[in-house]
Length: 289
Image (cartoon, rainbow, N blue to C red; front, side):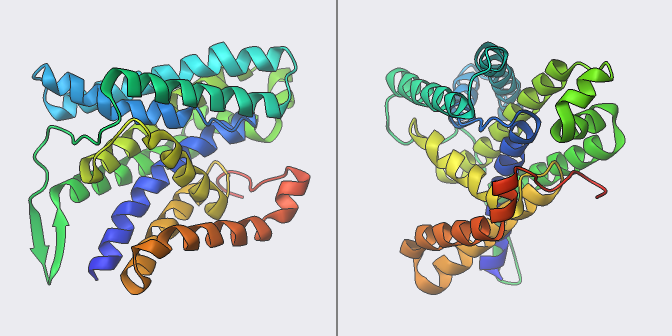
Protein backbone atom coordinates (compact mmCIF):
# COMPACT_ATOMS: atom_id res chain seq x y z
CA UNK A 1 0.00 0.00 0.00
CA UNK A 2 2.87 2.38 0.76
CA UNK A 3 4.27 1.76 -2.73
CA UNK A 4 0.88 2.57 -4.26
CA UNK A 5 0.63 5.86 -2.37
CA UNK A 6 4.17 6.86 -3.33
CA UNK A 7 3.48 5.95 -6.95
CA UNK A 8 0.34 8.08 -7.05
CA UNK A 9 2.04 11.12 -5.48
CA UNK A 10 4.98 10.86 -7.87
CA UNK A 11 2.64 10.20 -10.77
CA UNK A 12 0.68 13.37 -10.09
CA UNK A 13 3.92 15.35 -10.28
CA UNK A 14 4.75 13.75 -13.60
CA UNK A 15 1.17 14.38 -14.74
CA UNK A 16 1.61 18.14 -14.32
CA UNK A 17 4.83 18.04 -16.32
CA UNK A 18 3.24 15.94 -19.07
CA UNK A 19 0.24 18.26 -19.36
CA UNK A 20 2.56 21.29 -19.46
CA UNK A 21 4.58 19.89 -22.36
CA UNK A 22 1.53 18.63 -24.26
CA UNK A 23 -0.16 22.04 -24.06
CA UNK A 24 2.53 23.69 -26.15
CA UNK A 25 3.28 20.70 -28.35
CA UNK A 26 -0.32 20.21 -29.47
CA UNK A 27 -1.04 23.88 -30.14
CA UNK A 28 2.27 24.77 -31.81
CA UNK A 29 3.91 21.45 -32.80
CA UNK A 30 6.95 22.75 -30.90
CA UNK A 31 8.75 20.49 -28.43
CA UNK A 32 9.17 23.08 -25.68
CA UNK A 33 12.39 21.71 -24.19
CA UNK A 34 13.25 25.09 -22.69
CA UNK A 35 10.39 24.41 -20.29
CA UNK A 36 12.83 22.21 -18.35
CA UNK A 37 15.01 25.23 -17.62
CA UNK A 38 11.96 27.29 -16.64
CA UNK A 39 10.84 24.56 -14.24
CA UNK A 40 14.33 24.10 -12.81
CA UNK A 41 14.57 27.82 -12.08
CA UNK A 42 11.29 27.92 -10.15
CA UNK A 43 12.45 26.34 -6.84
CA UNK A 44 15.44 28.71 -6.79
CA UNK A 45 13.12 31.69 -7.26
CA UNK A 46 10.75 30.43 -4.56
CA UNK A 47 13.65 29.82 -2.16
CA UNK A 48 14.98 33.33 -2.78
CA UNK A 49 11.55 34.83 -2.11
CA UNK A 50 11.27 32.79 1.09
CA UNK A 51 14.61 34.26 2.20
CA UNK A 52 12.87 37.66 1.98
CA UNK A 53 10.42 36.36 4.63
CA UNK A 54 7.57 35.65 2.29
CA UNK A 55 5.40 32.67 3.26
CA UNK A 56 6.13 29.63 1.11
CA UNK A 57 2.67 29.60 -0.48
CA UNK A 58 3.06 33.22 -1.56
CA UNK A 59 6.62 32.62 -2.75
CA UNK A 60 5.59 29.54 -4.71
CA UNK A 61 2.66 31.35 -6.30
CA UNK A 62 4.82 34.28 -7.39
CA UNK A 63 7.53 31.92 -8.68
CA UNK A 64 4.93 29.96 -10.69
CA UNK A 65 3.58 33.19 -12.20
CA UNK A 66 7.13 34.22 -13.09
CA UNK A 67 7.70 30.80 -14.68
CA UNK A 68 4.59 31.25 -16.79
CA UNK A 69 5.80 34.69 -17.87
CA UNK A 70 9.24 33.30 -18.75
CA UNK A 71 7.72 30.46 -20.75
CA UNK A 72 5.56 32.99 -22.61
CA UNK A 73 8.60 35.19 -23.28
CA UNK A 74 10.46 32.24 -24.78
CA UNK A 75 7.48 31.42 -26.94
CA UNK A 76 7.09 34.99 -28.23
CA UNK A 77 10.75 35.92 -28.70
CA UNK A 78 12.00 32.56 -29.95
CA UNK A 79 9.41 30.17 -31.33
CA UNK A 80 6.95 32.72 -32.73
CA UNK A 81 9.77 34.47 -34.58
CA UNK A 82 11.03 31.17 -35.96
CA UNK A 83 7.48 30.34 -37.05
CA UNK A 84 7.17 33.63 -38.94
CA UNK A 85 10.43 32.88 -40.73
CA UNK A 86 9.25 29.44 -41.76
CA UNK A 87 11.84 27.59 -39.68
CA UNK A 88 11.82 23.80 -39.60
CA UNK A 89 10.80 21.69 -36.62
CA UNK A 90 14.47 20.82 -36.14
CA UNK A 91 15.30 24.51 -35.77
CA UNK A 92 12.67 24.85 -33.05
CA UNK A 93 14.06 21.82 -31.19
CA UNK A 94 17.67 23.00 -31.42
CA UNK A 95 16.85 26.54 -30.30
CA UNK A 96 14.71 25.30 -27.43
CA UNK A 97 17.47 22.92 -26.33
CA UNK A 98 19.92 25.81 -26.50
CA UNK A 99 17.71 27.89 -24.20
CA UNK A 100 17.47 24.95 -21.78
CA UNK A 101 21.27 24.71 -21.70
CA UNK A 102 21.62 28.48 -21.27
CA UNK A 103 19.14 28.53 -18.38
CA UNK A 104 20.88 25.56 -16.76
CA UNK A 105 24.26 27.26 -16.99
CA UNK A 106 22.79 30.52 -15.71
CA UNK A 107 21.28 28.79 -12.67
CA UNK A 108 24.57 26.99 -12.03
CA UNK A 109 26.50 30.25 -12.24
CA UNK A 110 24.18 32.09 -9.86
CA UNK A 111 23.52 29.35 -7.31
CA UNK A 112 26.17 26.62 -7.92
CA UNK A 113 25.43 22.94 -8.59
CA UNK A 114 24.90 21.71 -5.06
CA UNK A 115 21.61 20.10 -4.09
CA UNK A 116 19.36 22.39 -2.06
CA UNK A 117 16.14 22.01 -0.11
CA UNK A 118 13.22 24.37 0.09
CA UNK A 119 13.06 26.38 3.35
CA UNK A 120 9.79 24.84 4.46
CA UNK A 121 8.74 22.35 7.10
CA UNK A 122 6.72 19.71 5.34
CA UNK A 123 8.57 16.58 6.44
CA UNK A 124 6.15 15.53 9.15
CA UNK A 125 3.07 13.63 8.09
CA UNK A 126 0.42 11.18 9.12
CA UNK A 127 0.27 7.41 9.26
CA UNK A 128 -2.95 5.52 8.56
CA UNK A 129 -3.13 1.70 8.44
CA UNK A 130 0.63 1.50 8.18
CA UNK A 131 0.81 3.95 5.26
CA UNK A 132 2.81 7.11 5.86
CA UNK A 133 2.08 10.24 3.86
CA UNK A 134 4.32 13.24 4.42
CA UNK A 135 2.84 16.72 4.46
CA UNK A 136 4.77 17.53 1.30
CA UNK A 137 3.24 14.53 -0.48
CA UNK A 138 -0.25 15.40 0.74
CA UNK A 139 0.03 19.08 -0.14
CA UNK A 140 1.64 18.40 -3.52
CA UNK A 141 -0.93 15.75 -4.46
CA UNK A 142 -3.92 17.89 -3.51
CA UNK A 143 -2.49 20.85 -5.40
CA UNK A 144 -1.79 18.71 -8.47
CA UNK A 145 -5.30 17.25 -8.41
CA UNK A 146 -6.82 20.73 -8.10
CA UNK A 147 -4.78 22.05 -11.03
CA UNK A 148 -5.51 19.03 -13.23
CA UNK A 149 -9.22 19.33 -12.48
CA UNK A 150 -9.10 23.06 -13.27
CA UNK A 151 -7.31 22.23 -16.53
CA UNK A 152 -10.01 19.77 -17.60
CA UNK A 153 -12.72 22.29 -16.70
CA UNK A 154 -10.90 24.95 -18.71
CA UNK A 155 -10.74 22.66 -21.75
CA UNK A 156 -14.36 21.59 -21.57
CA UNK A 157 -16.14 24.64 -20.21
CA UNK A 158 -14.38 27.80 -21.39
CA UNK A 159 -13.90 29.60 -24.67
CA UNK A 160 -10.14 29.48 -24.26
CA UNK A 161 -10.31 25.72 -23.83
CA UNK A 162 -12.23 25.24 -27.05
CA UNK A 163 -9.85 27.62 -28.83
CA UNK A 164 -6.85 25.62 -27.62
CA UNK A 165 -8.37 22.41 -28.95
CA UNK A 166 -9.36 24.05 -32.23
CA UNK A 167 -5.86 25.43 -32.82
CA UNK A 168 -4.41 22.01 -31.99
CA UNK A 169 -6.60 20.45 -34.70
CA UNK A 170 -6.52 23.11 -37.43
CA UNK A 171 -4.67 26.38 -36.78
CA UNK A 172 -5.18 27.59 -40.35
CA UNK A 173 -8.93 27.08 -40.20
CA UNK A 174 -9.14 28.85 -36.85
CA UNK A 175 -7.24 31.83 -38.25
CA UNK A 176 -9.63 32.03 -41.23
CA UNK A 177 -12.54 32.23 -38.78
CA UNK A 178 -11.00 35.34 -37.20
CA UNK A 179 -9.50 33.91 -34.02
CA UNK A 180 -5.98 35.04 -33.17
CA UNK A 181 -3.87 31.89 -33.27
CA UNK A 182 -0.96 33.79 -31.72
CA UNK A 183 -3.07 34.77 -28.71
CA UNK A 184 -4.17 31.17 -28.14
CA UNK A 185 -0.62 29.88 -28.45
CA UNK A 186 0.60 32.55 -26.02
CA UNK A 187 -1.98 31.29 -23.52
CA UNK A 188 -0.64 27.76 -24.01
CA UNK A 189 2.93 28.90 -23.27
CA UNK A 190 1.75 30.79 -20.17
CA UNK A 191 -0.26 27.89 -18.77
CA UNK A 192 2.53 25.46 -19.62
CA UNK A 193 5.03 27.41 -17.55
CA UNK A 194 2.68 27.53 -14.57
CA UNK A 195 1.94 23.79 -14.64
CA UNK A 196 5.61 22.85 -15.04
CA UNK A 197 6.62 25.20 -12.24
CA UNK A 198 4.07 23.66 -9.87
CA UNK A 199 5.28 20.17 -10.69
CA UNK A 200 8.89 21.22 -10.14
CA UNK A 201 8.06 22.80 -6.77
CA UNK A 202 6.25 19.65 -5.68
CA UNK A 203 9.22 17.47 -6.64
CA UNK A 204 11.66 19.89 -4.97
CA UNK A 205 9.69 19.82 -1.71
CA UNK A 206 10.33 16.07 -1.47
CA UNK A 207 13.73 15.41 -3.04
CA UNK A 208 15.44 18.80 -3.18
CA UNK A 209 16.57 20.65 -6.30
CA UNK A 210 19.72 21.62 -8.15
CA UNK A 211 20.78 23.50 -11.27
CA UNK A 212 20.95 20.37 -13.44
CA UNK A 213 17.38 19.24 -12.75
CA UNK A 214 15.88 20.74 -15.92
CA UNK A 215 16.79 17.96 -18.34
CA UNK A 216 15.52 15.30 -15.93
CA UNK A 217 12.21 17.14 -15.59
CA UNK A 218 11.85 17.17 -19.36
CA UNK A 219 12.53 13.43 -19.51
CA UNK A 220 9.64 12.88 -17.09
CA UNK A 221 7.43 15.29 -19.06
CA UNK A 222 8.16 13.64 -22.40
CA UNK A 223 7.73 10.18 -20.89
CA UNK A 224 4.30 11.10 -19.51
CA UNK A 225 3.26 12.63 -22.83
CA UNK A 226 4.48 9.65 -24.84
CA UNK A 227 2.92 7.02 -22.57
CA UNK A 228 -0.43 8.78 -22.23
CA UNK A 229 -0.54 10.52 -25.58
CA UNK A 230 -0.08 14.20 -26.46
CA UNK A 231 -3.75 15.12 -26.63
CA UNK A 232 -5.26 18.17 -24.95
CA UNK A 233 -7.14 16.01 -22.48
CA UNK A 234 -6.61 13.74 -19.49
CA UNK A 235 -4.25 11.48 -21.49
CA UNK A 236 -0.86 13.07 -20.61
CA UNK A 237 -1.93 13.17 -16.96
CA UNK A 238 -2.83 9.48 -17.10
CA UNK A 239 0.57 8.81 -18.65
CA UNK A 240 2.22 10.57 -15.73
CA UNK A 241 0.28 8.46 -13.23
CA UNK A 242 1.21 5.25 -15.02
CA UNK A 243 4.85 6.34 -15.09
CA UNK A 244 4.88 7.11 -11.37
CA UNK A 245 3.23 3.83 -10.41
CA UNK A 246 5.47 1.72 -12.64
CA UNK A 247 8.63 3.34 -11.31
CA UNK A 248 7.63 2.85 -7.67
CA UNK A 249 6.55 -0.78 -8.07
CA UNK A 250 9.72 -1.60 -9.99
CA UNK A 251 11.81 0.06 -7.29
CA UNK A 252 10.02 -1.91 -4.56
CA UNK A 253 10.24 -5.28 -6.29
CA UNK A 254 13.50 -5.14 -8.24
CA UNK A 255 15.48 -2.27 -6.72
CA UNK A 256 15.90 1.41 -7.53
CA UNK A 257 18.56 0.72 -10.18
CA UNK A 258 15.86 -0.76 -12.44
CA UNK A 259 13.73 2.39 -12.46
CA UNK A 260 15.39 4.00 -15.46
CA UNK A 261 15.70 0.87 -17.66
CA UNK A 262 12.03 0.02 -17.12
CA UNK A 263 11.04 3.63 -17.79
CA UNK A 264 12.98 3.48 -21.06
CA UNK A 265 11.31 0.19 -21.99
CA UNK A 266 7.88 1.69 -21.23
CA UNK A 267 8.63 4.63 -23.54
CA UNK A 268 9.77 2.29 -26.33
CA UNK A 269 6.58 0.23 -26.05
CA UNK A 270 4.45 3.39 -26.11
CA UNK A 271 6.30 4.68 -29.17
CA UNK A 272 5.77 1.39 -30.98
CA UNK A 273 2.06 1.48 -30.16
CA UNK A 274 1.86 5.07 -31.44
CA UNK A 275 3.93 4.46 -34.55
CA UNK A 276 1.07 5.25 -36.91
CA UNK A 277 0.34 8.54 -35.12
CA UNK A 278 3.98 9.53 -35.38
CA UNK A 279 4.08 8.68 -39.08
CA UNK A 280 0.92 10.60 -39.95
CA UNK A 281 1.23 13.44 -37.43
CA UNK A 282 -2.40 12.86 -36.41
CA UNK A 283 -2.75 12.52 -32.66
CA UNK A 284 -5.59 11.88 -30.27
CA UNK A 285 -8.18 14.67 -30.39
CA UNK A 286 -9.18 16.66 -27.35
CA UNK A 287 -12.01 16.12 -24.90
CA UNK A 288 -15.22 14.60 -25.96
CA UNK A 289 -13.90 12.54 -28.88
